[in-house]
Amino acid sequence: MRKNSDGATIVVKLPLPVVEFIDRLIKSGLYGSRAEAVSLLIQGYIDNLFRLTENEDDNRARECREIAKKQRGG
Image 1 (tube, helix red, strand yellow):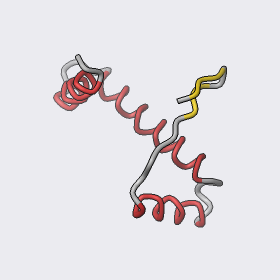
Image 2 (cartoon, rainbow, N blue to C red):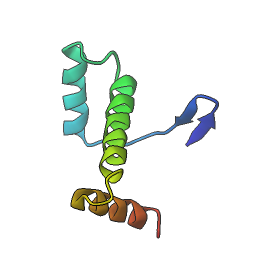
Image 3 (cartoon, rainbow, N blue to C red):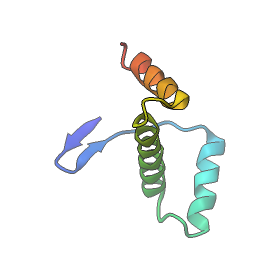
């Protein structure tokens, strides 16, 4: 990972079917490039996790927090 003032550059290895799906999204005009598609998809996923974890009484939110905690080694 390389960090700069705009964020961080992360290299990911995706399974071929995922890359082919992303390429279809690009061909449909939804995204302009693989980098844009992956970046926006990841941002959307993370935003959704944050939204889910805002509600302390939500079981899914608790599950997401537990998963995140385990992934951080906590």
